[in-house]
Image (cartoon, rainbow, N blue to C red):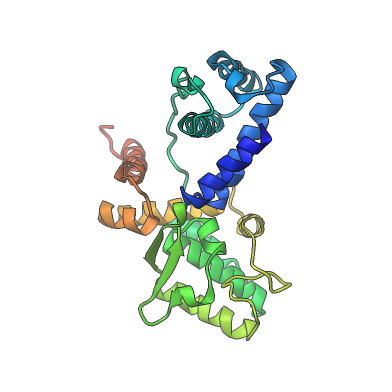
Length: 291
């Protein structure tokens, strides 16, 4: 079973150009399914797996109160894997043909109000290179609306200070150009000058001059959220949501926001129009005497 899994992951990486994030999640999901089979069904070959094995697995996840989004991803991983096995001729019947994915409840993304966002950006103090790096990171996450994984994968030569654009590698390793903004560029220049010449080609590095990890950025954002006294739960992705929401609030074109965020489908970007609509209704209900 493990050999088939490894061949599948090589296929995803080489032929489907899957990101490290996707590979990591799929590996964790499929290994979890294998452990479930070994514990409950004693299945030792993939061709012995039946659709009711998968349904029992999903039922077990539900009993353990797994989030619906996690269950949807696990079903996606299983569908992709069994489709691969069937196409390669290792299965006569694909058991996932008889398993429906759980319906996803699309929640509205959380974002910061403009004043709270400004407070967070201004809370970073200090003139050493690490403080200047943190300031540049916050400005970059909000100003360009990029994902934390896209930020940590940036190279020094990905930023064009002349055109005020950065080359970003998104999901599926697709590249796109995003505007940075003058304030973000100023913060970036100060950081790079203070950082000085080091061998690393990574744009953002840790104190050992190694490429900064996504987890480190998440911890850094959490630290400044506490310093700013914000009660809201904030992650790097909240800054991305805030960027999109604030742009649409100020009349930005939906297609342009889609391109900046790197969404493949416009429907993904349209969720932010629901956010702005909900906010407007709330303001109306609070302020209008006839509401």
